[in-house]
Image (cartoon, rainbow, N blue to C red):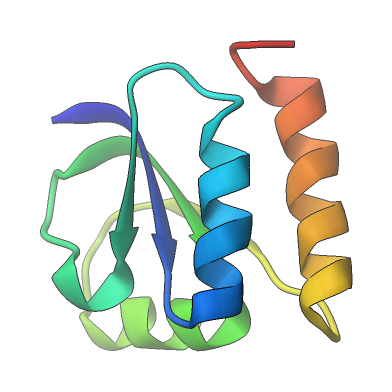
Length: 89
């Protein structure tokens, strides 16, 4: 189990997830379709479609999701959180 796990669905969200992961220690970036229970202690989801697909798996895991009206707003929300809560400030 990793300390942090970032999930994504689309190519645009993959890039946001990759950049987001740079701010955290012991972090893995995974497509939401490949997520398995207990893959990470802290779960972060990038994008609305990834969140919908994660919920469809009916997993009891708690998570934090970043969704915006477009990829730029999603990026802004994720970066704001990462800069204020990330391991590497």
